Image (spheres, rainbow, N blue to C red):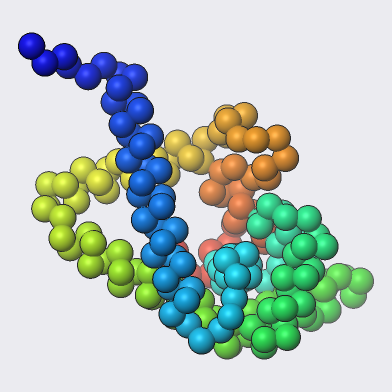
Length: 183
């Protein structure tokens, strides 16, 4: 007689499935990054995406949003600025501070990478039966909601930085101010 899976079996199966989906999404992101002419690292692209999502940010806020130290963020910004993707401007509210912004070219790079990812994910999603899509939407929404619960920090390694999605956005900008819808 077949044994019915208990909750721990289902939890382990779900963890394995989420890890497999994560590997798939990382591979899609890597292909998207490779599809553009720029020679960017994943960290450099993440910095561009944070600036695109949140608008102008100070270096310390960007470093926090990326989960890196300010000197690492500075090297990332230096490289992005040399490529013409980011510019630095004096903060009009405090002349001692510098604010980082995407250039038009930087925004174009982000748009191209995100559109590539969206198109590749769309192909996969369209292959799924409608009932599976519906269940996946509910499941992913629920996963996103619990990812934003404050007690998630305890689950991560010490010093890992903000764990909640909203914390990452807030750290990058000082407040959550999405510039445009997330893709």
